[in-house]
Length: 356
Image (cartoon, rainbow, N blue to C red):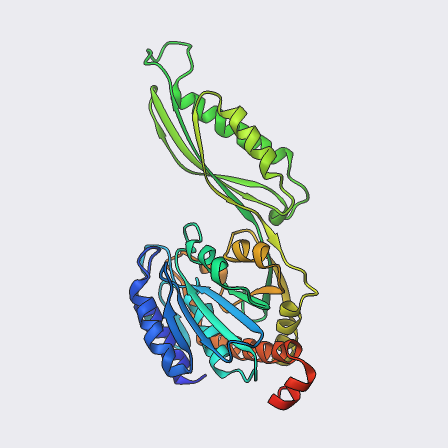
């Protein structure tokens, strides 16, 4: 792999960028990517937008998030392994997109790389992209391994529950606030279990009690439920309101699940490029959420998720990426971009540009 590509990733990882604090990394990329042949700017929410190619041509957009979870991991290299927060989730995939887009020969097609903010929270950066962009094909950068292609992500509903009860003695049979909260949680678990289909985690609604505290008089909890495609969000919200009773219920996030068409151009191009590197592509359904959940339903264009790294290392103190895998991923994505360019332009334009 080129030392330039390795250096880019190392410098990106060296800059801490927890959600809400991506400005330093964004400013670095806005400066750096001009030397990689991109026109760059920062948009209103802090996303860095880097483009190359004619404005009038078909557009392929590559979206990767700059933010990480707050905790840090010592940045160091051990052999071909680069350790550091974001190496996998998801500065490695974003750097892959930058390097591939800079190297790809795509003729009259425009490539736009978007480094977005706050994916780890509620996707503010990706949501803002919907206002001013409408690509013909798009990729989202997340770790799936260099020979993996992400085709689906579960949705998410985040619920905040707050309840009050009168002060009573612990010997009183009257319901306490903590007991009301526990009863609400048990109802949510039972509801999700009753609607689980199949054995795959991707197909089952999975609630997680992410926060809980309280006393006899006051109790609160936050529940995050990962939902599969086809899950009836409206019915779930009606159930939650009924189960909450007189408690105060606030839904902080409603993100539907998404699954892309595997016959689409983005998936096909990646699979072809992976085979060209000597591997068999693996189509992956993920149990988390990603910016794919935000942009795919609105744009409704061929999309796929791609990026090197082992997602089992996300958010852990062992987060690292193999630079050999990173190099392969750059080549796969470059190949895929060039294949897509040939499909997007008209035959006579492609011939004139030397794409076909």
